[in-house]
Length: 270
Length: 225
Image (cartoon, rainbow over all chains, first blue to last red; front, side):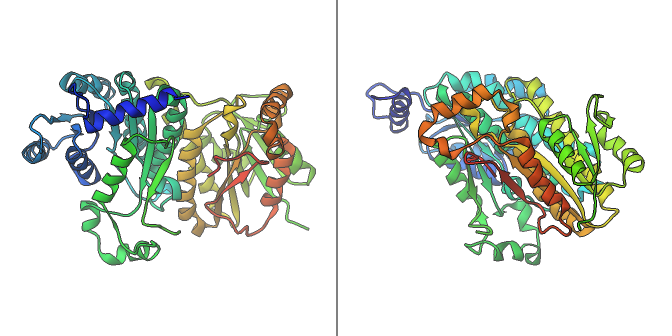
């Protein structure tokens, strides 16, 4: 007997390769925090993979515009659509309206990649509560609220998917990053909760936990500040943002993963 | 003979908290029990734990061990209000753990234990699944433990499979009946047995555990950390 999930997968595959005689609408993904670092690499990868891509940014409009222009010029198919949305994920109002904006622009929303986040590191024992509350609100609260707001649009599609960008810090812990690790751990739990709650309706929900990845933030560090991390990593190198993006693209493709958190850490301490 | 410890149990009105209090008291330790709301048999009550802890430590301590007990109720994340509530509770718990660690960091060989609910059995039993709380606090504990180890505080967690007392016996029986092929793989654990295990850890001096999440359960904790 063929289950409805298997049927969904077949439809999704047909959509992706567009083998049908009748044109099938291109799938749309929304990526939060898409102008820098890992988010930028995810947007680039998904555009190259043929998705219609919406991405968010918080304040750097000129950076977003320039990135958008570059992506549009580089898109192989002129029919492919890419759009940037200015959103503060800490703002409830802004988050609530975003999925409708995306659906209005693209006509559909098939997938959501929750990448945006912030950190505020420091000794936790002397940290004021307002600092960890801000991190929790942006990373966990903003992500969870946006996902809930996007659910009606996602569940209208045949093979909807959510990918959450958590962090190895949320699994293994990191000194000086208690609030960040808490928020990312909460996202791992949210991924499980959402995957259980909506799995039967065909929504696939998974997370990734990047380890030490080469981003603008890391580039300014002196090697002696991270040598010990590389030494404890089986691959003996940092990860590249493109490698994280490839994992996100994999999780967005039809499959049997659900509620899982994929570590992208080069074998850190394993 | 082991040194007698002064232990504070936060949220001791849960079956495991009550069992731990009984077990520790019978072993001769000094136990102070807390609940959010005043209840018979509970020593102290209050919801603003992070602010009150120093006062309780002065009145009933000085504590050498602090246990943050299990919470009742399954997490729901259906609405933005649910998310705000979870977020608020996480923030509050972080503040409480921070306050507990700060108190113990003034003395040697402190232990802080955070009890988390394991929820693999939620597909068969109406357990209090709390994946966001559990996973968030795992991240917090593993991070903070690294920070406070040098102050002589060992911060750890128990990830506890549902306890026999948390559910009606009939529900356990039904679950086992539905899982006949796997019946030998799980067994409801009693609160007192988990309490005995935790007592043994609490009694250890210089325990070789920091930033650890210990799975506790018989046979079915697939989702343990």
